[in-house]
Amino acid sequence: MMCFDLGGPVNKAAYTFGVGLIESGTYMPMAAIMAAGMVPALGMGLSTFLAKRKFNDAEQEAGKASFVLGLCFISEGAIPFAAKDPMRVIPSCIAGGALTGAISMLIGAKLMAPHGGLFVLLIPNAISPVLLYLAAITAGTLVTGLVYALIKPVSQASPLTATQSS
Image 1 (tube, rainbow, N blue to C red):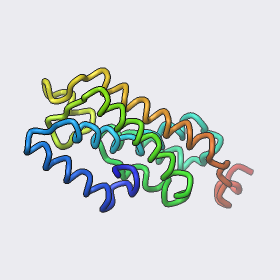
Image 2 (image 1 turned 180 degrees about the horizontal axis):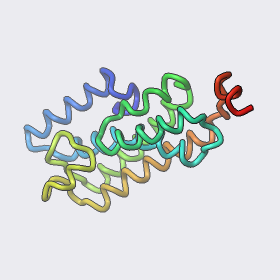
Image 3 (image 1 turned 180 degrees about the vertical axis):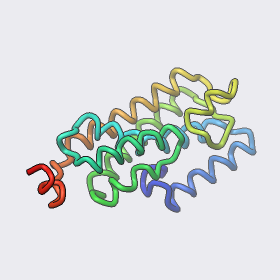
Image 4 (image 1 turned 45 degrees about the horizontal axis):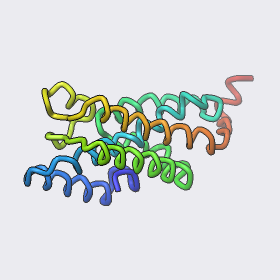
């Protein structure tokens, strides 16, 4: 749900559900929600690094911003990529996010805070187990980034870029 619409209503419904569960003392779903919500933006950033030749300069810059936004649990960093290529980006994000959420639940990760991305690590005992949680995020990011890097076609240069390089 976190990776389907990248900050839209489905994403917000999942997030709201997780926040409500925190209030009732149930912390595992929020861990999976935050981890999976980081994956789309992190994955798009990774894909621009892995397959540089497939991305134009503007897309590569968007990838850098996307990666930083992903670290902050802002999945909207992947929106520019999804807007241009939704049929490849969204499934790539869903695959990585699903893996991350599954691993997070499998390891019993718990998150006591409703937001913050990796910055929650600065709060003692807010996330447990920390290393396995980071491994879950890394696994999903790798899946998203690698899948999209493999299936994305090479970008066509814009007329302005082609003129400048001549």
